[in-house]
Image (cartoon, rainbow, N blue to C red):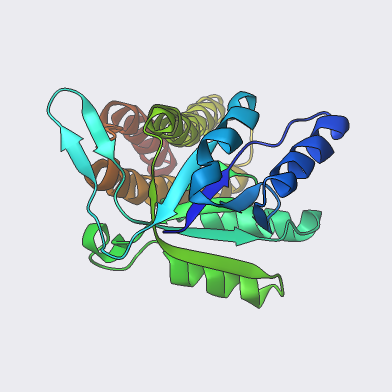
Length: 249
């Protein structure tokens, strides 16, 4: 059985080099920066070394597992994941990746390492969002190296709550920003202090963002049980108000 560990690299340059040194001494194999293959008998020692760096222990399994929920307690298992990792590119390409992955339901494990649902088609019937294949094709298209590891599950359940909260907060931040932008545009249109054309262009951009995040949020609800309905309703009202005032001009 193959085990992996992924961790958040420390900000201090000194500690960044110390951790890889310890892992190599234990016979671990580096797969990608903060993502390592670990021998089963060394797992406990590795987790001890990385305990201050939010380690996530994973292992490969033969079968495809579904995400599991416990009533009134939320999710207990994320199910089978596909891990995608790529070389961190220069600034221009980073922006392209950031824009592209906004259309993807994923869990960020660490920098440039993302986990996708192995059963993407189960939650995205119309294939409207970015899945593992689309994302890897995109990375290859901008001429960056990419590695993919399928049929992976998270072993240490303690990291689930943190990963889910980080995912929830990221989506909430996107919805909140759309809401804020639309409220600002509404006030500008109401006062008539800005060009209507500029407001329309900005509104269309935020409307497209809202459509995407709404689809992504629906995926997360089916996959992870995360409910964004309250935030989405606020953003919907803000979008509708701008649309209404622009149509009256």
